Amino acid sequence: MKKILVIGSGGREHALVWKLSQSPKVGEIFVVNGNGGSCTLATNVSINIDKINDLVDFAKENEIAITIVGPDNSLADGIVDEFQKNGLKIFGPSKYVTQIESSKSFAKKMMIDENIPTARFKIFSDYQKALNYVLEQGAPIVIKVSGLAFGKGVYICKTIQEAEIALKETMLDRKHGDAGNEVIVEEFLEGQEVSVHAFSDGITTMLFPPVQDHKTIFAGNQGPNTGGMGTVSMSLSPEMMIEIKKQVIDPIINAFQKNGKPFIGVLYPGLIITAEGIKALEFNARLGDPETQSYMRLLKTDLIDIVEACIEGRLSKIEIEWNTTPCVCVVVSSGGYPGEYKTGFPIYGIDQAEKIPEVVIFHAGTSFENGKLMTSGGRVLGVTAKGETIEIALKRAYKAISLIKFEGMYFREDIGRALQQ
Ligand code: AMP
Ligand code: GLY
Image (cartoon, rainbow, N blue to C red):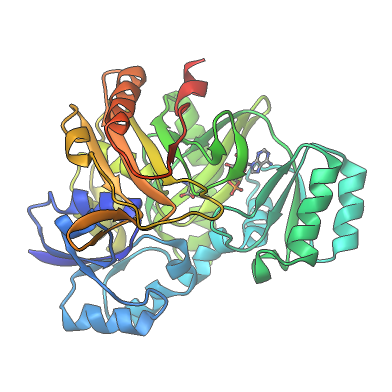
């Protein structure tokens, strides 16, 4: 039985722990820093996630067989390189290849070099030049900071005024700090958005089923972007999935491989299917949150077998099986998120909600205080449900949510609606 360490304390990590705990090959699971859900299946350990050396020490002292990394920051900080230097097995991409996510300008340059279809763009580090370009292009237009910004560094500007404010905020006021040293001004694209994930061992890639994220805080794509407020299964034709692999995923994996810097982990491009075809919006070098919550409900294969096959470069030798039942995840958040919000409120009704058939609730910002489950973050819960149809799955998820209560509780009521129209 293998001891596993999971890095991260969100809903994604609770879902990973939930899946790992079902494996006959997995023994004790530790989670840094964990939440009120993961502690029921694993041991939450309190270590500063930024202190990679402390994490290395913990893995050594506790004879961890494999470490699985959730958050982008840890990957961008080089956790994988450091663990490997210490002879520890870890699942995730190296610091170098993680730049595909941590630097949007790196990603854009790579997309151009590898002929990957993407929105037209220019990169600026000078405010006046960026503004002139925006005025020349007109609205709608998209402004993105190059660095990591917790999913909040993208501005979809419907008017020139909005674009001017976005440039001022990012370049002059430096709202996102160094992440805004370079800013990308990009063509606004219209079409169906889709998230595709792929496992990669550096050479072989295997795609997950497609899902759709809901990024904005309010219904109907209104309001600021969040980390994600819900996901639903999508049906894309097998031909489209082959095109996505061929046009977007494999060119990145092959380019890294050719450079002698293989991408091992999960590559997750954000895509938009426009009238002109597939366009890549961005790349993530990790599992999505809340996509993972849906994915872990659907993955039939033992996750640890896949992780080991990726690390050992033998992904082509295994089969990955997915349940084809539609699955949804509706995120329940603290009122005010993604802006300021209060925490420390008791959460009621989860036990009742989990009695609804095919419902599993993953915790994100929760913790136990004096034996009571309390809110402790922006995104609090991910309520997942499966059903014979998306409609049935959504009904179950929303029924479960109607049984949950905490002060200031918020969720989007339109998850999956756009797909049903
Ligand atoms: P990103 O972090 O680059 O995926 O952007 C976050 C979200 O902003 C995406 O999921 C899209 O909804 C939206 N977005 C980003 N770039 C564009 C674009 N060029 N055109 C339209 N929407 C975009
Ligand atoms: N759900 C979007 C993300 O994880 O980036």
